Amino acid sequence: MHPSAHRLISHQFQAVRLLRKGVIDVTPAQLRTAVDAAARLYPGHRDVEVERCEIAGLPMDVIQAKELIDQAEKTGTNLRPVIWVHGGGFAFGSARTHRAAGSHLALDLMRPVWLPDYSLAPEHPFPQALEQLSGLITQAISQHGTFDLIGDSAGGNLALAVCLFRLERNLPLPRSLALLSPWLDLRIDSPSYSNNTAESSLFDKDDMRYYSSFYLAGHPAQDPLVSPGIMDEKQLKRLPPIRLESTPADYLHPDAVAFAERIKKAQGELEWCEVPGTFHSWQLLPDLLAEAKKSISDLAQFIQAQ
View: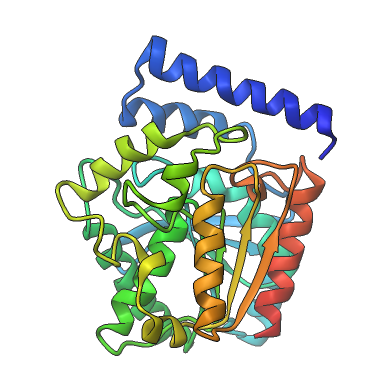
């Protein structure tokens, strides 16, 4: 990203933070409405079809390349899905906000991408989303044998946490796990909370405390099921191959760095990618940013390699 464009986006983010908290005082429900309305302006690639359905009790979008649908009808092919757990501070975001990125990934992989609408906080705090996602994973394995898992931001927390949730119960895990700008530590003494680098994010440490409180609802943030970046070394070793993406300008970057160091120490399989000069969850804009398009392409190659 050109430095001038990065500065412009950074200033816009700072203005939105000030407006949202100092003037409008937006509630999670209002933010959901606003974000979903904006997402309608960015519907995704025209060469895919989006099926709205329900799997394991969860409403979701299933995105597939039109070419893939035609092939499946002729050959009866049953390709394993990629489940993408959307971000949004546990309180907003949806399948709609991630359709564009999901559609590009579906085209690059020629595989179906599932975007589940899990239950959001504060109405549905921990562990409801985690239990729903584990049920969805069980269904995916039952239907397709295996799957791959992606999560961005708070969705990265849920994606890693559901792996831990299933490890503790000796349940099957995904073939691969991708964590994009993930929020992996909800403790108030986390590396990200201490550093508070909010230059290129719509959110800062006060938002972290605000939204994590909705999800935690009194549950201790020291629990690895809500702060999966601090899971123990034995559990880290049992995780599937991981691709981790973050940008140094993101307020969550220190958590990603700390987690990468822990994976390396545990001798886990990690593909670690730092992308300077961009912003939190840049991967969601592949039609607009060269960095996002490359991230989706690299993500597809990582999944294919497994």
